[in-house]
Length: 133
Figure 1 (spheres, one colour):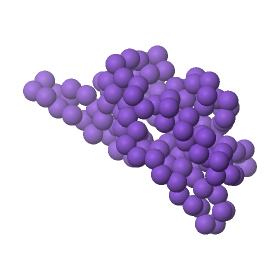
Figure 2 (cartoon, helix red, strand yellow; figure 1 turned 30 degrees about the horizontal axis):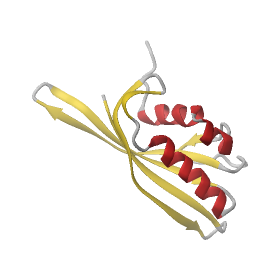
Figure 3 (cartoon, helix red, strand yellow; figure 1 turned 90 degrees about the vertical axis):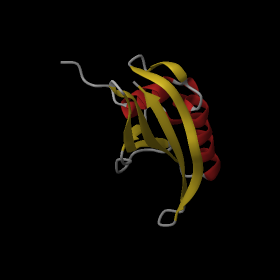
């Protein structure tokens, strides 16, 4: 049985394959949390929600909201990673993402910095909505 390709797996592969993103973070793209001791800059992908959209035949498509968080030790560094994420994902449409998930539309809904007071770092949260079949 083949493993299901989830939107977060497709986004991770898509970002890993993007030269601009890879130049900044290499393969440091994680799910849910940054592992202790992992180097910066990096990206963390979290699934926020999954909403099936129905028509008379059942589920016609699904909207999945992801939070893609850029992390770095400097504000200019984190801003560069966040911009690369936005440039890579916003507007992707009508194609297979990472060769596996049919994406009808991918859009960046919001992008905002958040100061992490305990570390003094700024993380940049990029909220992405993927409409897929």
